[in-house]
Image (cartoon, rainbow, N blue to C red; front, side, top):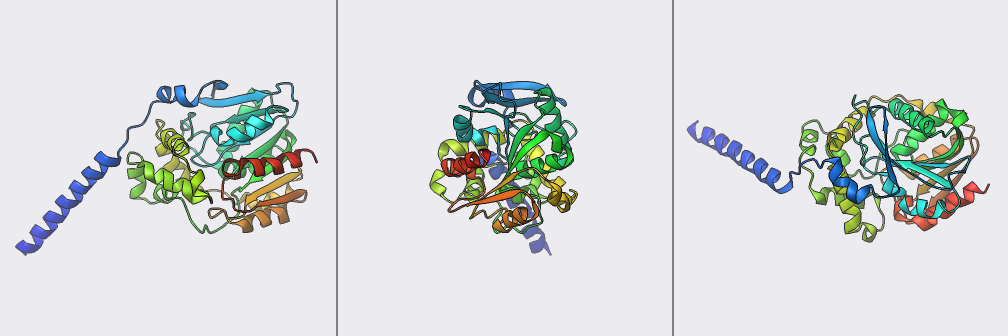
Length: 316
């Protein structure tokens, strides 16, 4: 009995020491947003107070463009994921993008409501404040789910729709980024709010890229530091918890009438290619472009090829 007690005590001490070691090695403090602005909010970045948030956004290009392009990023990303697209598009169009609440420099929703319905309302408020009453709306992953739900609720505000590896239909991933996995596990998700090793961020990015050589140190550093923006790690956990409670509005996708481009990376391991075909089948006015040797974030991994498809769609 004494031997068993000693073993249990030693095990507890060992676990405690291991936890301390992990915290020392991989524990990171939240970074105040003001510390991040110098690097990630240079001109033309602007902040606007909306729904209790200081929303980080960029409004570039031809301001007189009556139907601007609005770009919405996915989970864990930021407006920077569309940097390459914007550099080219702003020469002829007005291009607007923002950091969604929970991500980038915008930070968490005050009420911690990360339902798709709340994101749709946030987007409507943002567009109205920017005096955008009609736009070409494009979204990747979570952003894709937000934009097609937006088109369902506010069809008069959407001229054309672009779904880039969008979520929405039930699916089984072939591979899930490790950060997403941890954020959904009851015991471990709390640890994620203060233990966030940079190698985990890199592994999560490599999970959604096909060409791992494109996951550069600069790219990893940006994702990592914006993840550490004060409040974002808890917000990611809250967002992942909200997924299981979401309404199944995908049955209404076939009512969306706007011309829609379904743009997909053929080797997307997170949201499978079968979902692209399902969108194309259900949307009555859609075209489908599948990019070979590309993963979940085509505009970032393969900006030239994905932008060519986007521009061709604009000209239709």
